[in-house]
Image 1 (spheres, rainbow, N blue to C red):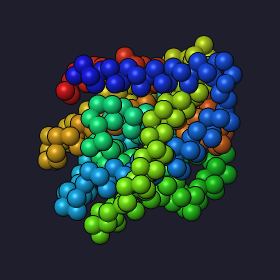
Image 2: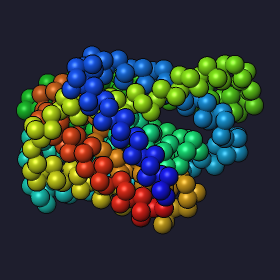
Image 3: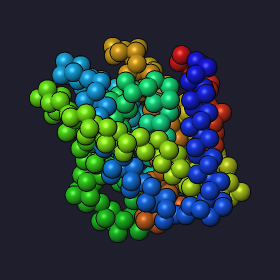
Length: 313
């Protein structure tokens, strides 16, 4: 328990370093974009490939796939709950789509992966990716459609919903790294140790660069610019109460390995997806609301994660 807290503390130290270096003008939005691409297109695929080949056999993977039913059901149910919450608490009409998307979809890679590694180690990574696949698929289909509908010119906004870009987001380099690693596992392919070492060098960049990106985002959102209102409070309730609670309740009904369920709960209780403010700007939706919700969710997570761990561990 203590070691998990210490590991998480140092994860957030990395985020603070990213924030501080952005304040010192060492980092900028352009550098943040470069770090994001480096993580998503190079470091993370290497990490995924090595993790699946090192930690899983063919039989273990076949057992693993059945667990996707929990993230699929939990996120669909959470979307439904967000629609009910919107009506019950009269969420501002112009931000209903963004609200439901942030209520349901979490930051499964830039924060989710480092946190799970800090708590559970490399054994958790395939479970992290399973949740990531479902989260990414629903975010770039249902989520982006709802955000587009927040645009007052709905017909013009929905025209931009194209299948090919969505598929590119879903079948990301990270997922491709996972699939290539899976093929290696199924074929019993042994990677030469020198190549494995090289991939490990790249894969080890994932955690520090991910947290630097979050630090850059928090700085650019601007802590002084954050505004708390009932709509943002609703997003935080969805992220940190409803979403993990739905996963936990499904875990009582659907039998999965304890580690898998714990990782799914942690993944469900992550801050807001960091892509939401960017998409809100692209679709002329409520970007200040999205940015404030993201900022509050990241800052609150510092106090929330120890409480969640106390309940889980």
